[in-house]
Length: 560
Image: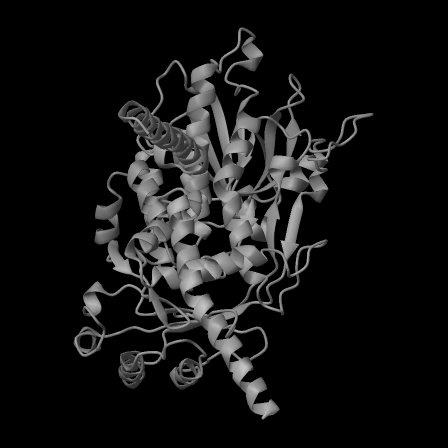
C-alpha cells in the first residue's frame, strides 16, 4: 500500500468517525428535546408578553400538587386562572391551612414520599423563593442519598428530600402569593360543555360550589383551557368528555388502528401491592445518638431496599410490601422483616441499632396502612376527537407503582410540558380572533401537540414500572397481556444494576435517566450496551464453563 493510499484511508476513517459523531450528537439532541424537559427549563416561569397571552380563563380541576403546578404555569399564559378543589384548603381569612392539617382525599398525605431532582428543578423555576419558604416552614431541601440497595448491593442515587405535607403546603402558599390572577374555588366539577362556536373545543365547565353559603349552587365557568388534575381517585376526565360528546367517533367515522373510543382509553393492571408507613418523632437529644452514617442532620432516607425479583418480593424504604403476608405493625415486626430478607448482602447492623434507639425513646406518631388499588394509564393520546383545549397531568393520566416515588415527578414533567407547548402554539398563532366571541381561544394545534409531547416524556414511567411489576407472579396483568411482557427489559435492567455497582460512569448515566434529568435512552448508548455485554460475558462464560466441566466430571465418575 502506497503512502498516498494509506493517507486517503486514514482520512476516510477519520471523516467517517467525525460524521458518525456529528450524527450521533444530532440524534441525541433531538431525543433530549423530545423525551425530556431539559431544554424547556430556561423559559419555565417566565411570563409571556401581553400580545401572546390568552385573554381568557384557564380552568384547573384539582388543587393538589399537579393542580398547583398547572395553575402556576397557566398564570403566565392566561389573563385568569380558576382552580376548582373539592376540599377546603384555606381558612376563613383566605390563608393556606398549615401542613399538619391532613388532606381528607389523599390517603398517602402523611405516608413516606420520595421527591426526585426534577421536582426541585421545576419548582425552583416556577417559585424562585421556594427554598426560603421551605426553611421558614421548618422543613428542609437537601441533596441526600436514598441509600438504595438492590438485593443488598448499593446503587449510587443522590436525590432531594422533603415531606409531602411540607411540599404541597409551600406550593399552595407560593401559588396564592405570587399569582394574583389565580382564583381558588371550593367545589366539585360536574361536567363540561362544548362551545357553541366551535364544537371541537370545551366552552365552559360546570361547577357545584361547596360551603353552607353556596349550598347546591352551580355555576358555569368559561374555559379557554381545561386541565384535569383530579388525580386517580376521581379521574373524571373521560366521563366529562364523553357526556359532552367528545372522544367518540363522529357519525359514520371508523376508528383507525391507533385510535380509541374515550371509554376504552384506560389500561389497568393490579400488582397486588400493600404497604405500611411508620413515622417516628425523634427528640433532639436522641438524634445525636443514632448511628447513622454521616449523622442525623444529613440523613434523608436511611436505607432503601429493593428486592431482586429472582430472589424475593419485598421492598423496604420506610415502607414494606408483600401481597401475601401481614405487614409490620411495630419496630420488632420491622426488624423481623429486615432479618429475613433474601439478598446478596445482609442489612447492616446500624439499621437495627437505630431502630432500637427510636423504639426505646418514642412510639410511632402515626401509621398509614395502604392497599394500593389497580394501577392505570389513560391513553388520551389515542382517543379520537378530543377537545383541542383539553389537557391532563399527574395521576389523572397515569397512576404508576408508588414505591418508585415518581408521582410528583409526573406532575413536574406534565407542568413543564404544558408550559412549553403553550409557548410554542401561542408564538406560532395569535390566540385572539377577529370575531369578538372567539377572543382568547387557544389555537387548535394545542391539543394534539400537548398529547404528543406529554406521552413522549411520561410513557416510559408506565412501561418501565409495569415491566418490573410483571416479574412477580402475583401481578394481574393488563387485559390481553401476560407476565412475559418486558422479559428482555427486566434482563437488561438486572445486568445494568450489577454493572452500576462497579462502574461509576454507568451508574451516573442510569441515575440521570431514571431521575428524568437525563435522556431515558442513554442507558442504551452503544458504550453502555458494550459494557453490559462485556460484563455479562465475563460473568456467564466462566459460569457456563464451570457447569459444563462439573457435568463432564460427573459423567466420567459415573462411567468408572
